[in-house]
Length: 494
Image (cartoon, rainbow, N blue to C red):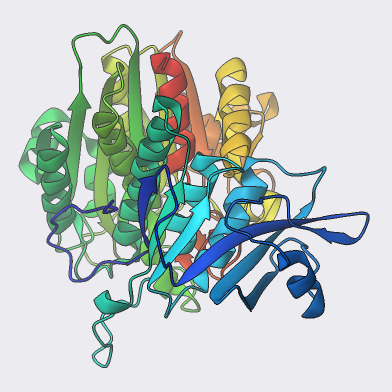
């Protein structure tokens, strides 16, 4: 099954392994992939299918332990056997399997055909293989054609609808995550508001989504002052993209909003030069939203969805917004700009106000919003704020699918800090304390009453600047696509 097979006007795409479903093992695979565990320090081979007699002894002979993240290769019964560790046999969940499958997938270069059973779960195995096998080499002039090196993996399941459906769903969700990774990894000289809107339109057409693109003239006519304010410093004008999926059987409605700052210099409040190249990732929220609604359409979820994606490039220039300026958002709320590097919340405010106008039952917004998120929760845990019940539900969903989320409060004491002497609110509190929570409080002003909503701050988890781990590659991770899709599935009741 091809993953993220959209035809898109991007300069390059990532690659990953190919997977197929079968109910019997194919003949003569290049390798068999065998999960192994440990119990009281001793190696165990719990999956007998494909393993063959004597495998435990062969693995013991080369020092395999079954610990998490361990990959061991042995030739056994004339076949390359690749054993991958799941750790303690009494402490295995879906994410353990997903991460282990991701580790083994990263080391399959040179393996033509492989086979694995779904005995530890079709879904985590397929997702782990596809996500862990992802590689993005970009635009290197010396790279060779790697298509001949693609590993094809047969996943063996039971001959029933449940396993087939689990395989299909895992492939769609992983494919959406790969799509988000490709968008985030694309350099900003190729992905800017106008070109990004074109790519989103291409995705919409191939996903059978309705799409509408607002250019700078329409944004001005309709009063999207936040988006225009952030984009006015660039010679590449902003855009707002609206995607919708409204199946006839839908009885619940969802609004999606994702931050799409295609490059963030900080504007007049210029960022430090060190590591600024990573700011190509400041549109990670938009990529996740676009990928998630595409997955909803592919899965034919009976849920009404409207996604609003504000796109802008935050640049310093003679036309850029200044600290001290006052802007008017869509819907009429005014903001005093204290720091132009707190720009994401300005474009999100407009999009949230417009999304709220449709009165959705639920609203999910995600963004690489604050460095304070990384200070508070590190690089792997997203912050979840919003309506208490929905916030806790989405945070738990993220943890369940391997995209850890942690519920955070909106602080009563920051209400005074939000006030401005010259506008309704101001875009930052200019303090070292609770900047992540202040941003969430700011966004709450643009949500309609009685709407169940969450804000997912993914500044750290969406872009991995360290070494690959589990099923997460270096650079774009695709977080929180799988959390959003799982939440949508729950809301749809499927």
